[in-house]
Length: 359
Ligand SMILES: Nc1ncnc2c1ncn2[C@@H]1O[C@H](COP(=O)(O)OP(=O)(O)OP(=O)(O)O)[C@@H](O)[C@H]1O
Ligand SMILES: [Mg+2]
Image 1: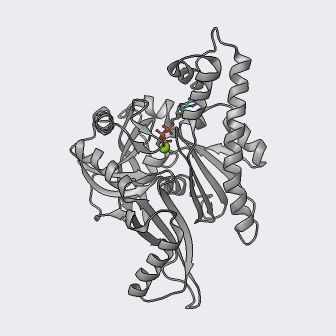
Image 2 (image 1 turned 180 degrees about the horizontal axis):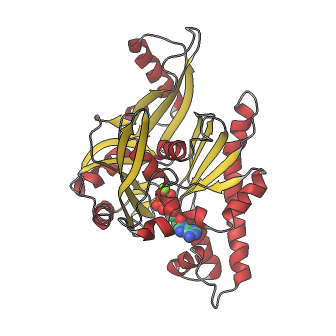
Image 3 (image 1 turned 30 degrees about the vertical axis):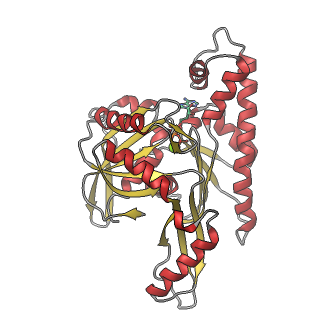
């Protein structure tokens, strides 16, 4: 989105508040088909208070972790693409009549001013036309308007510069997630109405894509961090211990029923919020069309009961998104710990990495 052209050897970096994920792909074109192969992946967790609710509190820790993630993956490419998320990132779909490019720029600015809940001067705006060549002159252009607070772009850019890397573009998590689904599920992408839900630590990204056309991009300010915090408070244990329980460590001396009960309640609260976004979409979409599948990703999707909870609540088949289903991953060359233990957390970075080449 907010970019300065594209070049080769770009590494896609998802700077989450729990961990930094980096993915570099080899992309080869054979005829009309693109073949994706993971060249390198890197991962590094962050200190708990380094990024809070999408705000970088400790830039040095974040840039150190970025360096470590890249070193861990033996990634030497200096060119970095990052994505942003959270409530200061707004992606909205609008429809405009066809018009000349210079009129378009003005209309987009007008729309942006009326769709952004914070001062326009503090915001960077970009857009993408979803249907650049409509079949009839009467058809509207569907446009994705992206608005991000400038201070957010500056803070995340500085982390990249501090790690002595070049920032080549800034994207949004939702687009990474969308591309990840498109590349890995080509049989569903053009046909189904699907909700992608990426459950992170502070942010839950929701994307709804109906037969290849994105309909909704929404970031909720909630995630696994709040689960861990509630476990820690209610069970009177340290945050670190609560984190281990979240990730499936045996309950040991802790009361497993209490653990189950707290997790169940937190999942319930999360589902209420996800439901608000999904129901709004279902009522707003002209046909009130039902969602065919839900795909979950992100660290919190690692909670065993999460998939079933979504399936029951929304009465919709729910699966875990496999970011490397159609992106070849050579386990002998790459650290298998990433693939075996935590593929779910690479959804955004893997999808972003596919955006590093013009398609
Ligand atoms: N196996 C697991 N089971 C349950 N929760 C897990 C598991 N592994 C990680 N988590 C939780 O997932 C969250 C981290 O996920 P992820 O790496 O997707 O977040 P992030 O992208 O760094 O954060 P965000 O984008 O929200 O700022 C943490 O809250 C962590 O507690
Ligand atoms: Mg994330």
